[in-house]
Image (cartoon, rainbow, N blue to C red):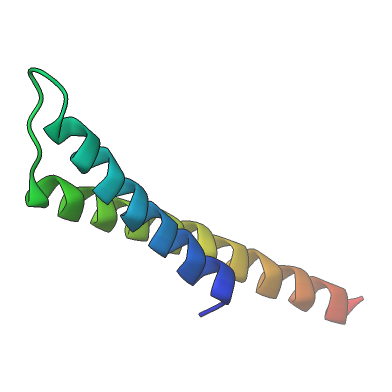
Length: 68
């Protein structure tokens, strides 16, 4: 897996942690480990979809170029 994908995933997880920490200090808001987990899983799924889509598009493009 490319480093850019791993860095994106790590940044999303760190942002989820920072967001939940901020919510602990906001009136009327609550913080939850489950929210961090849900945000992290959503980020990972989204990043992986984009990564796989780009990988698929590249292989299709290479195949078309090789046929020419």
